[in-house]
Length: 180
Image (cartoon, rainbow, N blue to C red):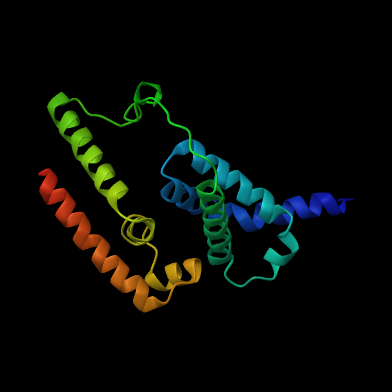
């Protein structure tokens, strides 16, 4: 006979499994690094595990889970902003391009790596709000209504933010000589 804990774990697995890939991609898009994404993803899963009974009654669990992740990310970002920053020498930072897939053409691989670096610089130059809406909408394929549910921002604000973010990205990439 299954214990209540086994039932709890089974419900958790059944309800979350269809959403895990999307949740991890969202964590990565929000944080911008694999290590931070894994931490955020794990924190959210722990938080949701405690609330699995609530999850059972939710009609759109994917949106609910993304909202929890976004809120947790924002809370962590605010907490971090209040902490004292410590300077890190650039030589201590990881390379960042080690995991890029390549092909047999080294010149094409170098061009692709350069384009990716330019795009990452341009995205980093955007404000948090602009970067978030561009990544969620244009990269991850979220609809504006889903982003509205996720962030709690009005739809009109998201539309104008997306328009301004795209225009700013175009300007930054054009100034860098990169055209996608």
